[in-house]
Length: 237
Image 1 (cartoon, rainbow, N blue to C red):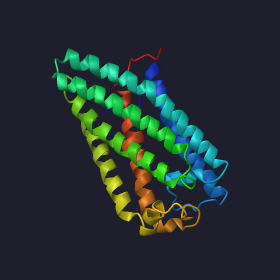
Image 2: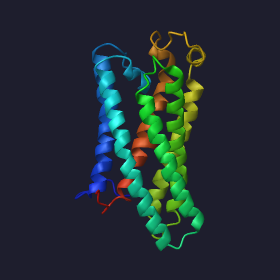
Image 3: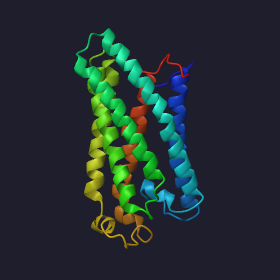
Image 4: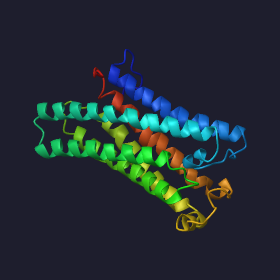
């Protein structure tokens, strides 16, 4: 598997700009939040970075921009895989699966944008719902994508194995995140008057937050980075 792509195409640059913006939006917001003592270092949920300013503005703006940039990237991936599936004489069901992936990815993108613009401490239920929709859709998209590219002739098997490992790790992190979520957090999501989002000890849910961060960096950003292979030579118009 190729890790570094030099002389990147326009589509690759767009993909990597998106990943860099998303990375900085979370990491810079986290650093500022800890330095301002709005959060302790171990370990806020990613969504909690939106509770205070200025880190909240960085977090919201960065992830919103990253979500918008992902739209043309998915369009490019759909077109590339459609051409390659047809050239490989793949069964028509995989052409339909490719279209399904594109639709699911767009729904996930809309969910992400809604999620990051609905602060968790102000709108816990809609924020939680849109976050769950985004996380599960992207993991599902990752699974279907693996099945699709297996039907493209000459597609690197080592890259498929890497994606499979990341995808499985993502599902495991989601399950472990739920397993370590404290009961008071779950109860608070069902209580509109709860002030849990503004008053709690991060250590209570530190392990759940750890698995959320791991899932995002492995099964989302790491997985997305592997699309550099598919976007090699693809231009952006």
